[in-house]
Amino acid sequence: MKSYKILTLGASGAGKTVFLASMFRSLLTQGEYGFYLKAEDFKSQRLLNNIYEKLIIGEWPLGTREISEWKFTCCIQNPDLENFPICQFIYFDYAGGQLTEMNKKDDKLQEIIKQADAILGLLDGQKIQALINNSNEQKIDDFLNKDLPPIMKWMSYCQTPIQFVISKWDLLENDNFDLKEISDRLLDIPKFKELVVSRNKEGSPVRLIPVSSIGSGFATPQPDGSMKKIAGSIPRPFHMEVPVSCVIPDLLEKEIQVNLKRLTTISDASIAENSGFNKLLNKFFKGVLSFRPLIDLVVNIIVEYFLIPIIFNDSEPNELNIIIAQEILKRIDNWGLAGIRRRVAADEKKLAEFQQIKNEYIMEIKDKTTALRSAITSFLYISNKLNQDFPDSEIIVDKLK
Ligand SMILES: Nc1nc2c(ncn2[C@@H]2O[C@H](COP(=O)(O)OP(=O)(O)OP(=O)(O)O)[C@@H](O)[C@H]2O)c(=O)[nH]1
Ligand SMILES: [Mg+2]
Image (cartoon, rainbow, N blue to C red; front, side, top):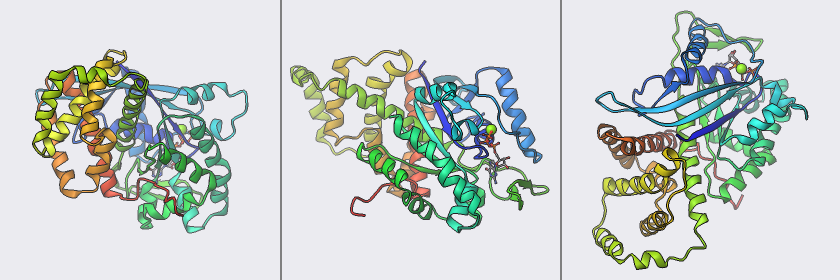
């Protein structure tokens, strides 16, 4: 089973540990998300649960001291309660000071960063609040000069998919901030803009994902910056499923692109020779496709031809299969995973239809192929829903600006 290392880059106090515990708790059962996370062993499950149980009573974790590694298997369950493992995620937690005050000797964290398959930049919502309100010089200075530079540096250094997660959204939500205001302010920072422009050029989406590990109405900030639980409140974590759901389609899209590139030297001759297949294709494309068969086609091609070998067998996809898949995707106007994301989110009716398809896929799970198809569709649905709920979550730099 393929394993992906996902690294959260964030300063001390940004909310890494609380996010990890709350994400695990939210994804402990499949619920509406269409997948769940299983901890590697009972001990890790207990440790994360302990952190969360303390949050509930208003006790925050102490600052992290050591680097720790957390392995999760991403699983999917069908209506008969059969479980299908899809892939593994490895998460890391560490003391944020190790990132912002990194010296040459900190090879351990550097090695982890270099080996990460995807990076989530965790931006402290409380500092963003200060930045937008222009309210606390110390916090603004820390954010701009201490916290952000190493995140930018490592994100530019690594070619992995990236996303920005804004923590403590409960605070920003109270102030009625919108993401547009925040992304405009962030784009005023030259290094930030540079990074977004370069990722936009490659066609990789860069998102701002608002999350709150405790949800609104659970705690209020105190004058010293700490959070105090509101008596009688219960946590309602918000968007815990989103960062991971946005990162996986990006990772898979990258795998697909790498495999397609690998083949640029091979001529298209083999597909022409495969005339039986061509006839079949032509037949298929004669009718105008409605939404479900189109999604079926794209997701099935991607799953069967690319992801099954990569994810389950840890091998490279067969070359003829890639050519066939490439040809089909070309004919339906480059509908890769990115294509689905671009087109669905903009249309409310399509998103509702997509949700329906996602639910049908869960009902149809019977083996690892159908499980993988369902997982991919759930991730795509969640990332599309984010685009619809927060239209400014995707940062795109207008070239004319
Ligand atoms: N309002 C609010 N506060 C939060 C949230 N998440 C974390 N906090 C606050 O931020 C503090 C720091 O969170 P941690 O998760 O410990 O931060 P960290 O990034 O792990 O910090 P280090 O371990 O020092 O690197 C917590 O003690 C809370 O006071 C959130 O979703 N909402
Ligand atoms: Mg911590």
